[in-house]
Length: 76
Image (cartoon, rainbow, N blue to C red; front, side, top):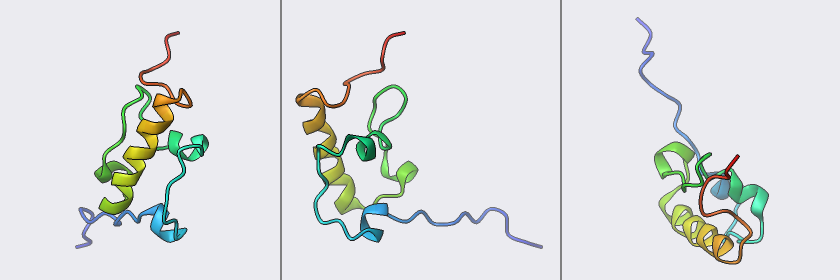
């Protein structure tokens, strides 16, 4: 019987690209780690490692403070 419960392990995209620092000005890349409501997505959803998740959170908060990214969802 095949094991369908096993899921493929997510791999950190920053580790694959060998990125040491995450630039807060790279808004297209950072937008992938925000939900449609503007919340920062957790590690279990994105697959980032703990080291890069911490620096990703810092970069997202910096981008929000200088108005490159929204704090909340856009009102329609």
